Image (cartoon, rainbow, N blue to C red; front, side, top):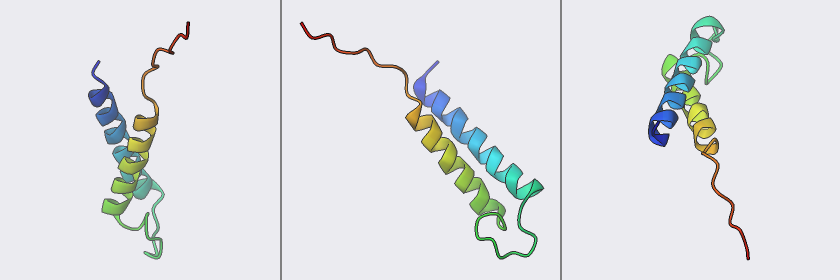
Length: 66
């Protein structure tokens, strides 16, 4: 599978997780800057998903020194 497709899927999963956090746990009073707005919590989740997807790159072959 293409690495960019995997990273995109992780970003989408993060965005879904961010929205789910807003929907199920969110801040009722509106004083919480991230969880009181669905757009911000979705973007924050996508950012976290992007960071996780970027750091989990495929294993690179180690150079063998002769």
